[in-house]
Amino acid sequence: MISRKQIFPYNPQKDINSQRVAYFISLVLHPLLLPSILLAVLFYFTSPTVAPVSHSLKLPFLGIIFIMTFVFPMCTAAIWLLSRQIQTPQPKYQTEDESLETYSEVNLHMQNRQDRRWVFVFTSLIYVIATVLFEIKAQNPFITLVLASVTLSLLLLTLITFFWKISAHSVGMSGILGILLGFNYRLGESALFYPILIATILVGVVMTARLYLDAHSPAQVAAGFFMGFVVNFITVLVLL
Image 1 (tube, rainbow, N blue to C red):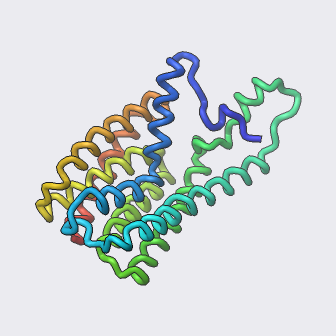
Image 2: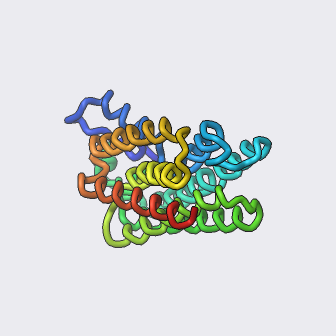
Image 3: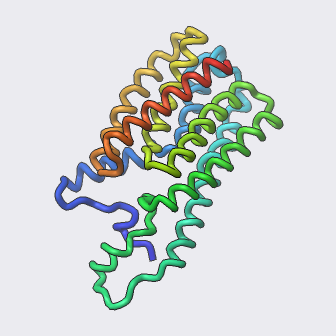
């Protein structure tokens, strides 16, 4: 059975309400939600110059993207982690508190490197399939560009994860900023000013939340920001 500590492990030395806020930020701006959020912003809060998609297709496209970039990866990750949970029996002859402390190798925050590796591999495969399907079926270069940019940063994140832990939240949020700035640089679209401003603020908020929760070291968060921003900004400049 999955315990609360495996989902929201609190640090007793820090303010619990501040940790709840940090967890809320981490959940609302989860990396798997960011592609849907980004495309929703581009669809509904910018001009057709930036997002040339028919109004009647915006909602269906968002629904498909949400399912392929969030629902499928989350279900795959949940199945993998639950299977690992079942395969790792709880130690006997321990109190409940002791077992919760020691039996945390398998948890939903994927502190275990093996869990992170395989979940990222599965997620990368799903994103590659989604990008290829949109390129073949939807034939919308705009959506394909966004998905390709996100997928490339995810593939690099997965590769790095085999050697070092890096913040996926930082990669995702800074990637959004990189994509928005890339579009702004190429198109000179004034409608992107406020999305860029909000994204810049949220990058700092997300990075602070991950550091406050001790989910990553400052180096891991900084590396995630640098990689996500550079990869997505350059990808947009090259492909747009």
